Length: 343
Ligand code: SF4
Ligand code: SF4
Image 1: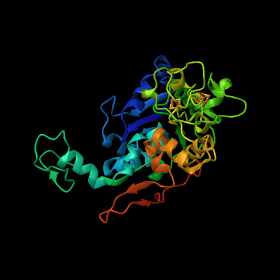
Image 2: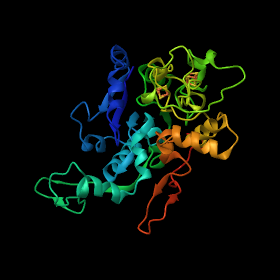
Image 3: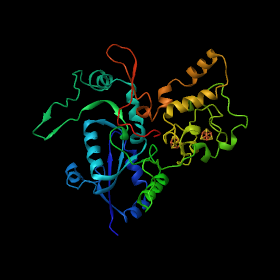
Image 4: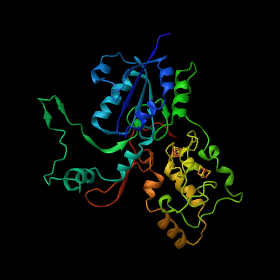
């Protein structure tokens, strides 16, 4: 049987998704009996020209992790889209924008100012922002452009499948590979993980009170003296987003006594993960007086954007929050290459 050509690429990400591939351990060797890796620059010496030389559609599937922030990332994912029959958004950053997507809460110029002009880590006070117009002809390269915002992969190119997680755990990657390589792959657009909420696979789910959860004070994990390992974390006042998060990871964080922050993203049919999470959290607050509600939220959730949109700001209805030169806060709508209603 002829092996299927497969590629891997990373954009704006931490590299954890690349490690997730290696975490397959001996299962990677089994997969290699069916696939031939033709592009994986983080692990082997592949160049852009190696991809350009391939025929359009010659690659069976390319797994792309990371969000898109740079012009170079956009160029390569568009090239890979052309060369691949299947594009898989691999991990939370390509799926929803991920942690890099939180930068959509800050203006581009503020980021450049902090890192290249005024940041505390700068030794020289000489402003040295990257200049994409400048070409180092003698070295044959120029810097990519740093875009105004961060985009999820399907806001740049059409995506066929999504493997969620920050990073996707080995069981999810293995299951997704098996589905993709089977004779009957799932319908295009499928998120290759569970369709139930995380709570359904959490060993603490049975400890929720029958009458429902009511919270008078939210607690932040690092400020809690002792977390009871036998009681639902949400019942203990820790913001666990398991009720609104797609399952599949086996409740990994909860097993480590940390609440779920939602890296697997929303359930099918949910358009905006953060809005669903916010709505759920609001529904369990045990107070009716607006002042009490405000106090509970202010004291327990000092960073609402980071709490509810830790992985999904670019895929939210908000997409981007910027402070333009007139100083007024504004939201930008998401880019037009948005096709999936529920990712
Ligand atoms: S809210 Fe969190 S800790 Fe509680 S059952 Fe759901 S996933 Fe488990
Ligand atoms: S528990 Fe939540 S945050 Fe942790 S790996 Fe699973 S989905 Fe991601």
